[in-house]
Image (cartoon, rainbow, N blue to C red; front, side, top):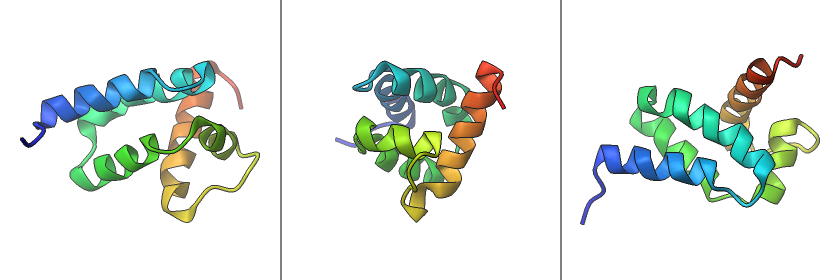
Length: 90
Protein backbone atom coordinates (compact mmCIF):
# COMPACT_ATOMS: atom_id res chain seq x y z
CA UNK A 1 0.00 0.00 0.00
CA UNK A 2 1.33 3.42 -0.97
CA UNK A 3 1.40 6.23 1.56
CA UNK A 4 -0.70 9.25 0.56
CA UNK A 5 0.87 12.71 0.58
CA UNK A 6 -1.25 13.78 3.56
CA UNK A 7 -0.39 10.63 5.49
CA UNK A 8 3.30 11.18 4.74
CA UNK A 9 3.18 14.75 6.04
CA UNK A 10 1.35 13.63 9.16
CA UNK A 11 3.89 10.85 9.80
CA UNK A 12 6.82 13.19 9.25
CA UNK A 13 5.38 15.83 11.59
CA UNK A 14 4.80 13.21 14.27
CA UNK A 15 8.37 11.91 13.90
CA UNK A 16 9.66 15.48 14.10
CA UNK A 17 7.85 16.10 17.39
CA UNK A 18 8.56 12.69 18.91
CA UNK A 19 12.30 12.27 18.67
CA UNK A 20 14.61 10.69 21.21
CA UNK A 21 15.52 13.97 22.89
CA UNK A 22 13.48 16.98 23.92
CA UNK A 23 15.99 19.32 22.27
CA UNK A 24 15.40 17.79 18.87
CA UNK A 25 11.62 17.73 19.46
CA UNK A 26 11.76 21.49 20.00
CA UNK A 27 13.95 22.08 16.95
CA UNK A 28 12.36 19.76 14.39
CA UNK A 29 8.72 19.87 15.52
CA UNK A 30 8.05 23.58 14.90
CA UNK A 31 10.16 23.49 11.72
CA UNK A 32 8.08 20.60 10.37
CA UNK A 33 4.81 22.31 11.28
CA UNK A 34 5.86 25.49 9.50
CA UNK A 35 7.52 24.10 6.37
CA UNK A 36 6.62 20.55 5.36
CA UNK A 37 3.41 21.42 3.52
CA UNK A 38 5.34 23.78 1.20
CA UNK A 39 8.20 21.39 0.44
CA UNK A 40 8.56 19.72 -2.91
CA UNK A 41 8.98 15.97 -3.30
CA UNK A 42 12.79 16.03 -3.43
CA UNK A 43 13.06 18.16 -0.29
CA UNK A 44 10.54 15.92 1.53
CA UNK A 45 12.64 12.89 0.59
CA UNK A 46 15.73 14.56 2.04
CA UNK A 47 13.92 15.55 5.25
CA UNK A 48 12.54 12.01 5.56
CA UNK A 49 16.11 10.66 5.35
CA UNK A 50 17.19 13.19 7.95
CA UNK A 51 14.51 11.85 10.31
CA UNK A 52 16.23 8.46 10.15
CA UNK A 53 19.38 9.90 11.74
CA UNK A 54 20.05 9.55 15.47
CA UNK A 55 19.43 12.57 17.68
CA UNK A 56 22.92 12.13 19.11
CA UNK A 57 24.22 12.96 15.62
CA UNK A 58 21.54 15.48 14.62
CA UNK A 59 21.91 17.84 17.56
CA UNK A 60 25.65 18.49 17.08
CA UNK A 61 25.07 18.94 13.35
CA UNK A 62 22.24 21.44 13.74
CA UNK A 63 23.97 23.28 16.58
CA UNK A 64 27.16 23.56 14.54
CA UNK A 65 29.40 21.82 17.06
CA UNK A 66 30.17 19.01 14.59
CA UNK A 67 30.31 19.04 10.80
CA UNK A 68 27.31 17.44 9.15
CA UNK A 69 27.20 15.25 6.05
CA UNK A 70 27.20 17.33 2.89
CA UNK A 71 23.84 16.03 1.74
CA UNK A 72 22.19 17.64 4.79
CA UNK A 73 24.19 20.87 4.98
CA UNK A 74 21.69 23.19 3.28
CA UNK A 75 18.69 21.66 5.08
CA UNK A 76 20.34 21.74 8.51
CA UNK A 77 21.49 25.32 7.96
CA UNK A 78 17.86 26.24 7.24
CA UNK A 79 16.59 24.32 10.28
CA UNK A 80 19.19 25.95 12.55
CA UNK A 81 18.30 29.44 11.26
CA UNK A 82 14.60 28.71 11.80
CA UNK A 83 15.26 27.56 15.37
CA UNK A 84 17.43 30.59 16.17
CA UNK A 85 14.83 32.99 14.77
CA UNK A 86 12.05 31.24 16.67
CA UNK A 87 13.96 31.44 19.94
CA UNK A 88 15.30 34.94 19.34
CA UNK A 89 18.97 34.03 19.41
CA UNK A 90 21.66 35.21 17.06
